[in-house]
Image 1 (cartoon, rainbow, N blue to C red):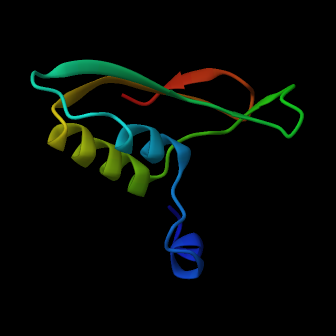
Image 2 (tube, one colour):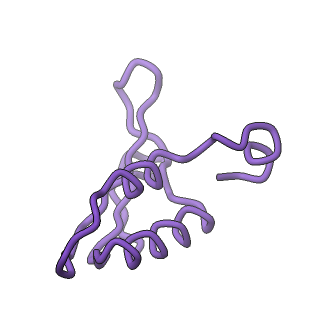
Length: 86
């Protein structure tokens, strides 16, 4: 969540963090892959969806708390390519 959004609207949350928050806690460690993508308004082009540092930190913290392990985090870039962050 960017600083502007957090000051204006405390309920603002990025989609990748919302997705992780909705996971149920697991009894055993579950490895997962996460793909974050963004499209233009009509859905015809992929756009940059690289998670911000706040989202990365929130994802890692929440996954650990819920007993998941992030194997791979991928996102779309401004050229519509899929990039791997980790």
